[in-house]
Length: 406
Ligand code: NIG
Ligand code: FE
Image (tube, rainbow, N blue to C red; front, side, top):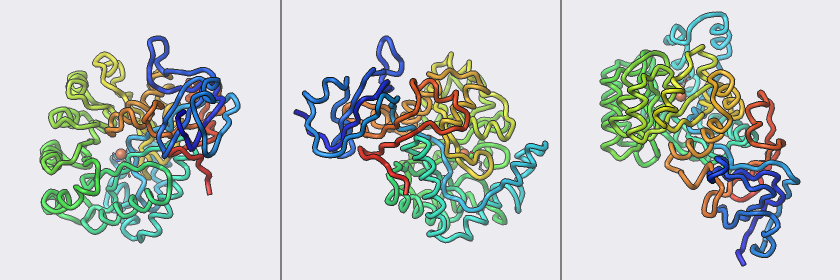
């Protein structure tokens, strides 16, 4: 007998996201799963559970509802204070996102608000965001710093992420984004020196990844190369915000340096897409940011052709995508970009997990994976994008325990 401390029973469709020859979502009809110490120890048809599993713990009855792995959001900026609703509304009336970047507006405005907030305030805000992630079905997030932009303030952001990891069952994968933009009032060359010589070495043990934004309001290709090459030499794995607002070398740099992910990519060329696929990089697409900045559709066909894995991320941030709902991002990717339900579901699970080096652990349900799953008030997972901005997640299980919002 397999010993378990949690079981979930009577799933109508249990989508494991481990593809079979007949089903890319690897569904078990009438499924069940058992977990012990936060990991899946058994998964299969419900009628076989009792002969194989001995339970000492909680049992959850899905009552025929659909179950799938907890969603994985591979691009979020959850440590910030303040809001920029007025900028959102100006964009609706025709102002461009680029035109909003100034000393008092855009990212610098959030940098000021975040610097003015103490750790407890930021932690409280981040905790409320974590609650919304979990309620909307996300159990793992990649979480960037990037609104502190000096040694002390970025340290504060890492402290917030550590505190968040202790206070919520949401899995947090921290990324250092000191290369978000040059902070207001600081000389460009001086900032690059501090970033490369002081901040990168200081945060290597605290971050799983280093990210940089290679686009006109942020860093040039030469600057991005310098930052990310140094990060790589220090042992960071890499992510990049690339070709979000204009064509540029960002995607190439990602491929050259073997980045784990290249994100946004609206303006990536077919050659760059092929280079990314060859390098084993995952494309992390951000439909929410694309939607509110009126960006063009990313080159989805070229990505399909090159077999570049596409993750779909929520990109929670106060400027371009203030949302913790990955299901809403999936709706946008389907409707605005013509992605299929299968593509977006894999994008919010297995491909996102792969970009975080969590392949086989998060975003899928199999023996040994995290016991992170969601119960949906739906008959099939493919229906998720059909429900627009309405949360159909009824229960979230994180680390083999039912999560209770409190
Ligand atoms: O992913 N591209 C850069 N960073 C964010 C926007 C951040 C902000 O506007 O505060 C993004 O879209
Ligand atoms: Fe971002």
